[in-house]
Image (cartoon, rainbow, N blue to C red; front, top):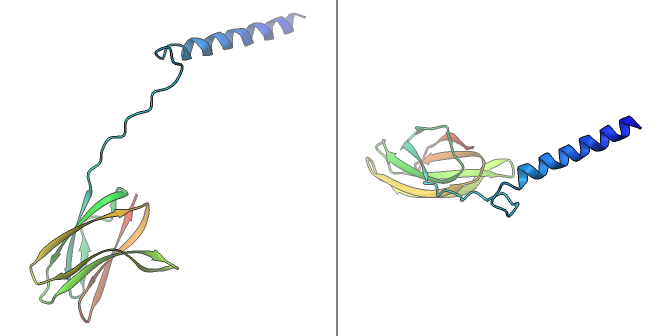
Length: 134
């Protein structure tokens, strides 16, 4: 009989403790939802040329990413960010179509979590670098 009374006593104490913890939140009993803070786009710099494709980062936070590409070669070059499709890097996420030598252009794209390839392509060459959205 004594163990039954102890169990009831502990249950009653736990209930009081839980009620005491939850009743101290403005009387509504609900937890306030945090307000999302606006984020700015991450920036990735790309040096693009014939057989050159380098990025200043290998990973970026997922979401809005601004790609700033500079042509560092002597030929016109395009810069494309590819995502995976059917096991290959063929899904174009964004393209900077034609950079002339020493020209800089940018684009802002949305990158969900995952791996991506940045392709720097001339009429004859294709160089690539990987970035990951984490």
